[in-house]
Structures are given as C-alpha cells and as structure tokens.
Length: 369
Image (cartoon, rainbow, N blue to C red; front, side, top):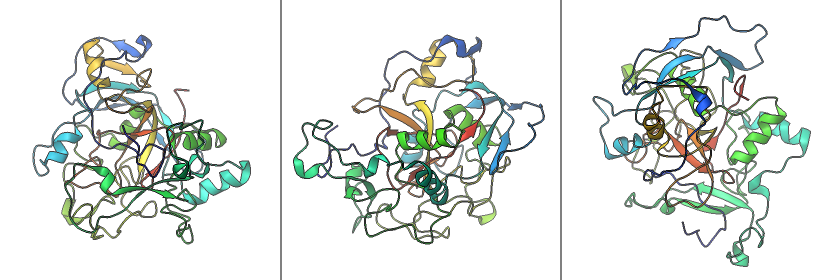
C-alpha cells in the first residue's frame, strides 16, 4: 500500500481484506477432529482459581467455547456489520486454559511507571531513518504517529486517509500531537503504543499479551453466541454499555454515551468476569499474527477444537506489505455506519510498528508462553 507522503510509517488499515492461502497453526493445537460450524454452549473449567490474585487482575477460568462471529438476527444489519464478520467465520470450537487478565486496559499512569523504570522509548518517539525507509523523502522522516482527525463535512467512507493523518510529535505522552498531554488523564488507557511497545511493557511487568482465543473467551464472560459482550441488545434498557461513536462519522462524535472520544478506564459496566472495556474505547493488541482466513483454514484442516491456539505462523493480508498482529474490541470510533467491531468475536489488525490514538492493550498471566 502506498504510504502517505507526510510519513514513511504505514497507517493502520481497518478495512477487511480477501482470503489468502498460507499455512496455518501447528498440529499440536488440535485435540480432536470434527466440525463445529455453529455456536454451542461454553463449558467453563471448574478448577478453583489460584490463590494470591495479582493486583488489578481477575481470574478467567478457561474452558471450551465457540469462537467467531455471525450476523445478528436483528437490529444492526448494516453494510458495516456484514463486513465485520468476514474474517470471523466460520464459528469453531476452541479450548483455552485458565489465566489471569488485567481488569482494565493498561493506563497512562501504569505505562509511565514502566518508562521511568526502564528508560524505554516507544516506536512513535523514534525518528525514522533513510535506511528503514529508503524511498521516503527527507522531510517525511519525522517522529510521530497516526491521529484520528474529524472531517469538516460528510465524506464517502471508502478512504480512511480522509480522517487519519500522520502527526509529527504524536506519541503516548502526546496522544493527538505536541499540543496534547496527559494532564488529568492518568486513568485513561495508554495509546499510541505499537505492538512492539506493548510486548516490551508486558515483559517488564512479568506478563504477556493475550492470544485472540484467550481475549475472546474472556470477553464473552461465559456467554455463548451473543452479539455483544453483555448480550444481544446494544443498549439494554436504554443503558450505554461501551464507549463508541455517536453522530455522523467521521464528522463529529456527539458523545451521547458520555464521552466524545476516548474515556477513562472502567466507566461502563464490567462483563460477568469483572473485565471492563472489552468493547469500545480502545482496540487491544493480541499476540496472534493476523490472517483473514485463519478460521477457514482450521476448518479445511478438519480441526474441530483447537487447544490454546496461538494463531497462524505468519501474518498475511492481501494488499498490505507490513507484518500485522491481531487487535480486538473496537474503539471509540466504532459505529454501525463504518465499523461495528465492538461486536464480540469480530477482529481487527495493525502493523506491528504502528500505534495510533485509539489502540491500547491489556496483559495476561498464564499459559501459553
């Protein structure tokens, strides 16, 4: 994909792509062979959680569940919704062991402790070099990161470069550019962190990033086949359950859910496992390489239940020339006009060396390593 002339770094791609044809995960992920194309009940492990819960983490029991997403039976059948499930099918059975998961996304306050302790410098704070991007003009070799920028009027939703721009000086300390800072935002999720940055934090904290399977098991909270992490109604009883986008996208987020743009963590009800913000607010990095056809290839391989799957061996996404990892949960920019990936089971992706102001992460402790 052609890079914007203002930056040599690749802007994260949110549109889904066609199915590819590279190898899938290792055979040791298989525990039995059959076919499970529809949602079936979740069978949670009954083993009691370990003692001494790590601070700020909750126990996810693990077990066997149906992973993926299908079109809702009512209410949100837009083109955006239909596109959102393209890489989240077929529905298939997965088993994951129990693990600890951060109750919230990693916050600015927590990430600042990591940086203070280690002196770590994020990808967005590094100035790109001519060696890294030999075809980039010298004026484009500046440190920065992509920032969502509302348009002045309605635009066709066929080119995300209309509302994303590369901003010199944007990084985790200055999420939307050098004129922004973290004053009063200590409890907001850290953003402008690339996958590489998130894994560095996780290692320092003695944790790791979740796999897609772990993330989805945790987000579903023991429920099976529901459209959202809380059920099938987007606003049960008229109550907002996640920070998403209201108003005409990408012109103005009217903030009807209480927040125009990003929100502090834990402002909406937790799921049944006690996890906050498993839908909306910010995307969350997962450890899996991204492939749009991974679930299909599991099916073609005759795999019915994958045990602790860690995704494909490499990323592949037609039209994208950068390695990508999976993202989950959607963000404050999700709307049924363009992106409904606040629907549990849907998937996202991002270049491993690129963050932006609607992507963060949370960590886990436990298998697999």
